Each structure stands twice: as structure tokens, then as C-alpha cells.
Image (cartoon, one colour):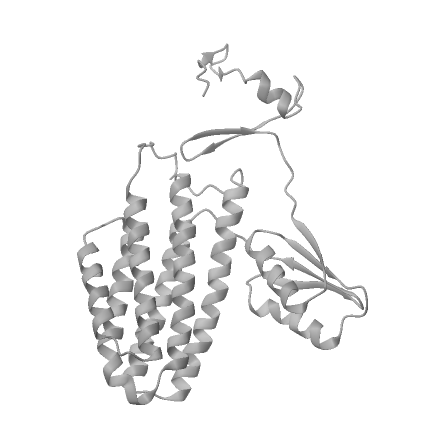
Amino acid sequence: MDVRRLQKIKGGSYIISLPSQWVRKMNLDVKSELKVYEVFDGLKIRPPLKPSLEKELPLTNLETTKYLIVTYYMQGVERIVVKSSSVIPLEAKKELRELQLQCYGLEVESETFDSISFKVNVKVDGDLNGSMKSFVIKINSILSDVELLLSNFSPEMREDLLARVSILNKDYRLLIRQIAVGVQRDDEINFKMQTKDVILFAITMRDLGRFITHLTLFLKELRGEEILRLTPSFQLLREMFVMSTNMFLTEDLSPMAKIREGFRRLEDDAPKTESGRELVKMGSYCVAIMDNAVNKSVRLFDVPPSEGS
């Protein structure tokens, strides 16, 4: 580590020298321009790099290609070109087009016999806390309606809930994109939080994504004859979800003991059926989110807030 002294020059500005080794490493000289911008805990200095916002991939295995398109989308790519060595079959093109339904802002830009190009037309902002709060509210709204399903089961209500949970995956992918873009293009998007906290937001999004996966499986496995036994455990799960996500967003750690005790009760009381096991798995992710909240609350440095934060 190299500590350098700040110097004041005529006109009221301040300067600091840069390590010559770093200047040579970055192939800079006295005429080079540098980006200087504020991050949560200081200033960042780097050359004005141009991001690589376009990816091209060959169409070999269709499922692999679909997976890569969604991954590129979540990691901040703005244009994705799929090329084939021959004419793309109509059914394959149909499946590729349907990816537009899975990702907000993903649009087919152009097509030829052997290619299909996507562009991403969606903005992400720096309010990561607000975005996660909105996502949590949507999940809790669905959990509330699952309770209604348990009190008055019907196949139509279950199908409606499964469709809504599927839409939640679009919100999940957009939030992952927001985190990925904010971390890689922090000169444009400022989350106004420490890097450690951004990492914990990403981990919590992973846990919420898995919670949604097991919620889907719970709904699919649900059988009318076990509803009476499931209802108390599901109500307990929903309480755990509300407490753990609120802990993460507010850093109020007071519900820790209730969440731990709730998970012990869930393990003991949930029916030993497929749907009961999915409830316990969802509960385990509530405990994981609680752990993330505790980790998020511990900081080694107190940094004064930026202006406007």
C-alpha cells in the first residue's frame, strides 16, 4: 500500500501524484485522459475504457444457446447475435423468440435465414435497495394469495399462482442485471453503498431466486388432501420470509431468535410429503437471508454519505 499526500494548487483545486509503475502498466503518458468519479467510500481513477456490450454466439445446442442468451442479458450485454452454420429451423427460431417473454427489455432486433439478433432496451438505476424492496413485496403478495389457495383450493387458482411466480423470474433476472451493470459500470450507476453490501445483495438475490424455485415446486406438488396439515406450516414460513427480508433491508436484527425458532418448528411440524419438504427448503433460504442481514450489518469503516444520498 502506498500513502500519498494531497496537495493544494492555485485556484483551490487539489492534486495527488500517481504511481509511475501503474502509469506504465496502463500504457499512459502525460497526455492521457483519466476518468475520476465518486464511489461510496472514495474516488475511483481509471482510463476511460469502452465496455464490450455485444456478444456473438454460434447456434450449436439450442438449450445451451438459450441459456447463454439469458446469462448475457443478466450480465449487462446490450446486443446478442446468434449465428448458425445453416438455416435455423422454424421451431428453433420460435423458441429463441420466446426468450423475449422471459427477460424485460429483450427484443428481437433483426433476423436472417441463419441468424437472429437481440437488443436489450431496459434501463437500470442505482436504487438497488428500492428494487429489492419492490421484488420482496411482489413475492409476499404471492405468498398471501397462496394462503387463500390453501383456504379454498382450486386448480385454477394454482395455475394463476404458477403463472405469476414465473413472471417473478423476469424481475429476478432484471435485478441481477442491475447488480452486474452497477458493479461493472460504476462510473454510470452509483449504488451509494459499500462493495461488501453489493456482494451481499447479490447473494440475497440468489437466495430469493432459489426460494422462488422451491415455491414453484411446492405449488406443483400441492395436493388437496394435505392442505389442512400444510396450512399452519405455510403461515409460519410466510412470517419467516417477512422477518428475514425486512432484516436484510433495514438491518434491524431483533427477529433473529424468532426466525431460528420458526425454522426449528418448521422442520418438526411440516408434513413429510414432497410439498412439506419444499416448505422446509424455503424456510432454509429465509435463514440464509437472515444470515446475510447479520453480515450486512457489520462494517469496519464508517463512511460519510455522499451528497444527495
